[in-house]
Length: 204
Image (cartoon, rainbow, N blue to C red; front, side, top):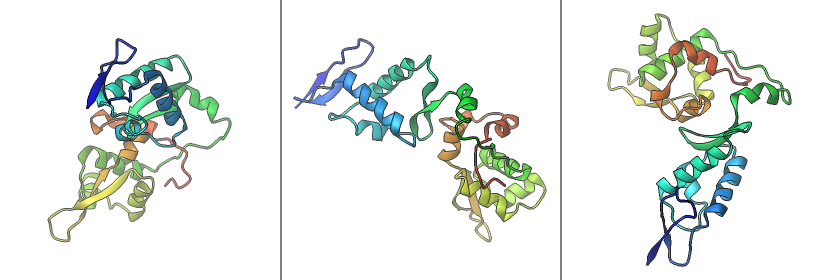
């Protein structure tokens, strides 16, 4: 038998929890905060729900995360949602100070790499032939390897045409690196190059 356990805050919906296992909202918020602060990667909704002793509704977890985000609204870090889940990160205006601790030159990707990435991002799924037709030049294997090694593109299958060419699409990692949730939030083409300037030793 389960019971509805209301949170102390009037802003939060009721939570379905097993009998005898009420949800301590204040404690749960601390647990979320600690987990997100110490995780190297974004935490998905399913992972966050595992942190609770009682079953949680998605709406309730999202409300708790929103309250946590508001707590840090005036700080140097922010809690936001990307394709893979939720994460804390330093605010963009703080990066120039943080980089003083470990100065690294942003990766500078070649025009060929950036053009190829843009075509895949905005026309996906595409084959190597599609990319070459749009760019008007041959796409080198190294360009595709650079994007694959960075985790920004992947082969998602083959096209049902002679030769069965591989179909390429972008990954969640690209969205995470751009601090986006979905492909619909992709920036204008001319803005992408400015956003993708990350410390990366194997830049092409």
